[in-house]
Image (tube, rainbow, N blue to C red):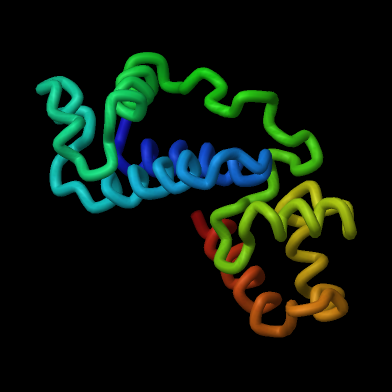
Length: 152
């Protein structure tokens, strides 16, 4: 498993924890760990093999165990105390610029966004501008992000 794959899992966990209203320190721990792993010059798997994960800033006993579990099984048992919020489908891509978990929940609730295609249609329709604090810049960011996702 690559560092980028670990980063993606940790960012997704942080997003889900945020949707659940989890402890902000716990959310921050996952985000900080993701950033630290993203900046590593060596594979995290090598550090795990050498039992040196705790040398990474922000990685303590709990996150060290999560990384070992992820490397061993390819997944982490549900780190959210309760099941993830079913009000936002997994297909909604939190990683797009400007699209954080709270906004994803709002768009899903208000406009029934369930797929990337739904999100693209919404951005092209200019309906985002009808929500307070949102506008053309967010629409452009979302459309650029969708285009990038389609290319990859």
